[in-house]
Length: 271
Image (cartoon, rainbow, N blue to C red; front, side):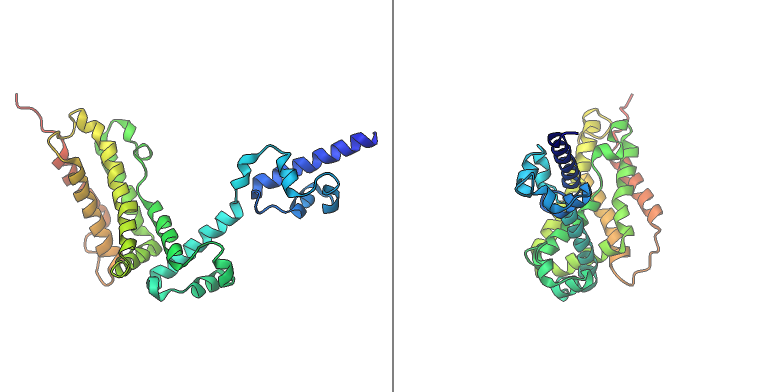
């Protein structure tokens, strides 16, 4: 094998290793030593072919990886989940950045690499919390043609939020802290309740247009009342403390769904 061929093969090996590491870790978190370890060569060997990480990355034609930060995103999600629990237990004012950093096992300075302030972190947690919003119409079978089953599916997914004690505790914190920080309640309302309502109205509108749902009905108002009832069950039995659940959730949801369906379904035309 000629010397030129060996060099070409080694360069190709470096590029293959670099591609694998960049795709796995993203540009920002990849180091030359990571690529060297992947290729099972010394870091100095890489510098025989490339001036550094920037030139090596540019040679690979994978620009979309430049914004990929899987480790950073994983750690940030871990931080928001820890903060979800602490904010839920202690409230916004009762939780400090020191508390969160200690729970994570690193310094407060390191914590500020992931958020600008405690308020910023609270809003990050609020975004995480609202991920429990019911899925879009396509995810609950809106294309099945059975709008009654669609209502049942949406109610079931909406009530799943009541089964996570950390999220319920955080909801209690939002309610309590919104007295002093009304923007907390505003964001929760817009990102959670309003999103759920909009998804349901959007999915039911085609059935109203086809005449299967009363056309004289204000669908937005009806869905608001429907979600209001479901939310009240969560607040009363999962967020408020000391209230015995004397109405089983399954029975409550079933009754509420039946009442809602009967109230919005189109009446048979008089013969």
